[in-house]
Length: 406
Ligand code: SAH
Ligand code: TMP
Ligand code: ZN
Image 1: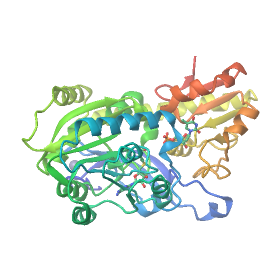
Image 2: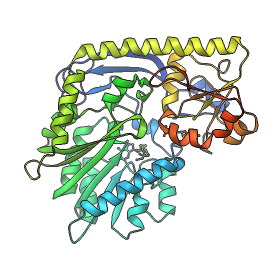
Image 3: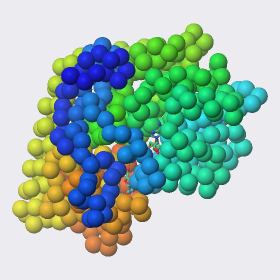
């Protein structure tokens, strides 16, 4: 049995998705033969409540100079991160020498707002191609993996930070203790650690199993984060439920006994107790729901194929890699996937090698059905794609339930 990455207790996997490729590993035909696969398995630690992958892909295989995810492809997320920057600047920079550090700063979607206000900042982004985009916008960025050692050198060069922020990145890092030790070193004594990640409660509630892929090493809950940060003499002082990325949680963390703890923390812990986030049977039930979801989606796609309908995928998301490979969806069921990200276009999807095409390809010749892989951006997409519906097109959704959008 594997060991928990947080407390080293033995954990039993509750679900295997079988062999999986790198979720963001879009490729060209010459690379098909050497594609990397690992077993995607997820387990629950009964000791510290952390849900996590039990086999891990080396970080350099996922985050590198050809990283395919550019945060700024979504206008909604740009607005979301503008609000984050405003919140940080108005509430958390009360010192005379303000300094904001962000990990996983990607193409600068959040920090550009801090930089344009003239606030000293530093982005830490190991994927050098996306980091380069941020640098070109004038955002101070270093292209390295954050850890305890890097924290010490940042303190030497820049001093201590008021805010350490991370969105959709803390859950990507297997060495969380080194990260926490580094953050503690880097923050001022009254500084704040703020991070947000997809929320385990939503994954359970919506059977959004496609959140499970190589990059997401952890599936956070308030219960598990509480235990983790307490080991570092830190405490959660506030939490905020967010609607982005299919349901996320934002955690506000400070040095122990330095702040008032908001009611939101105890309230959310109570909610988690009620949904059984700390109990093994919750995850056994989840694995049954996942299998049912797969069967239903496959039945639907196969029946549409038998009727001779054209079906394409919408959004070559990292999440779609899990759905496509776990369900065994080939280019016979989905002829292509449309995506607005240039680096993905003209390539093939990881594992099943479904072609990725431009958005113009989609609008020039609407299919009968589009399977919404980018369901976390549904509001933005439905607003933009009225033409598809006018043309008689229909959306297929699979989260929270498999079926056609009414
Ligand atoms: N914060 C952005 C990007 C999330 S994708 C957003 O929410 O849209 C995760 C990012 O974290 C990637 O760009 C990846 O290169 C980066 N990353 C992965 N491991 C990291 C580490 N150890 N330190 C800093 N960044 C890391
Ligand atoms: P994400 O779910 O990981 O944020 O990835 C979203 C993907 O969907 C990304 O590759 C861009 C793509 N996309 C589109 O193709 N059209 C859209 O309108 C939106 C919002 C995203
Ligand atoms: Zn544990």
